[in-house]
Length: 553
Image 1: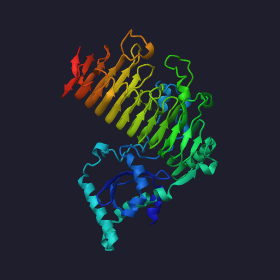
Image 2: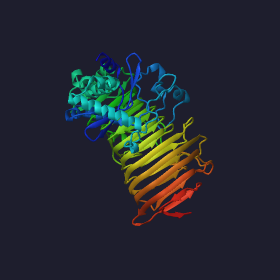
Image 3: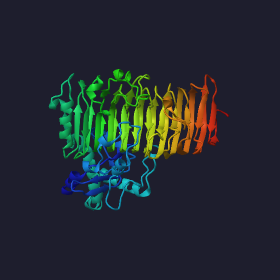
Image 4: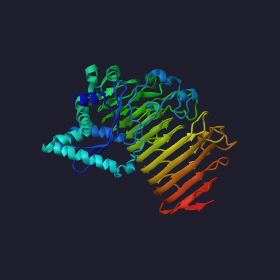
């Protein structure tokens, strides 16, 4: 028991849990970092839970299961001296950041000199979660099953106890951790205890609750209960001493007056945090209608700076779940310098007339996932800036808006390549574009876009459903003196069907100096007012498989 308590004291990590028949759960390779820097690995285990245990752990299961494809589950505090201050970053979220800033980014947690990753041999992609365990895993699962069965029946003899000692310690430890995590291992910080009251400003209360929670040495949760509150600009940052959660169930209103936000880039900021969760049934209302009327930033370089609803910067192994972002003055969500950040069941909405209200914009980040979300805005539902890598967009409904976009790219110096995007099982409704890649001509920027894959997508009355536009130049802000120097390779569009609002369903307009390579079009079935659609290619020779609109010159 002493050893169990010691492990529990040192243990905190993220567990991948999977429901099986007979109320069974699997824990996939839990990597833990102790309070004194000790790291322990619990191998895959199977634990039989009765109905009461299942109910006890349902919150843990819901919280933890979405770390399924995170590659690094180590908890590590990052001090401010190792992170670049956001004050040095460009206010334009599309603009790349200085190379000196990027050199300071540490988006991976080191696990000793050997760089050991206990999950490197596990395939935890959502499409392969149900893969069979190997023979060693099955043997271990059988031993765990027998051990717990014998324990319940009271027939475990001394020989079995001796043989199963190590298995018992690991399994029992994991079981106790799961059972106690929510009930005993999370310390609550309710903003009402810090003076927050309905229909009043809670900026100070939330700030103070965060400071105490972030300083907690055990996992903590800041709670904003159901009610309507006002909130000024707030910057909630780490590093924190343990995993931290903010649960918002109320409605939070931003100031309507632009001057009350002092021209800041984001209204609500979360920065420099490991194992952070923002969840709840709450709504963050940017009250942006007044701001949209003053938004002339596309034409006026000296325009008023409009704030975004959220800024998530330098978050590792974190989750944003069930939150609603409404009527942001600018972008709803800006993601910068993050690693293993997952959005689940997000609701983002603003009218189609709201200018520049991108849903989620990602830049200089790795392994960002967006699952099961609804996004409707006046601009891109999801957009990727430079330096975005290993991005997954699964089961997202987009519309109204400008579609799902890579770019725009090539406008600013020091841009980094964009690599690895999967968009799958998504639906786009009444959007100005479908899935597109856009780069600027007339600039000397040299970079690349590669491994872009769009699959199983439904279009409903979508203009320009499939588009590569390497002559992107809104409001005539560029010259076409020379073509884009962004190289696009390894792009696929598969099983895309539905209705187009334009007769041209596919336009691949690639750069004349850097033609697109390795482009595949596979089973594209789109109609326009019941008639056939067309496809047009420039500076690329795509591989064509299955059904395709009529190709025109």
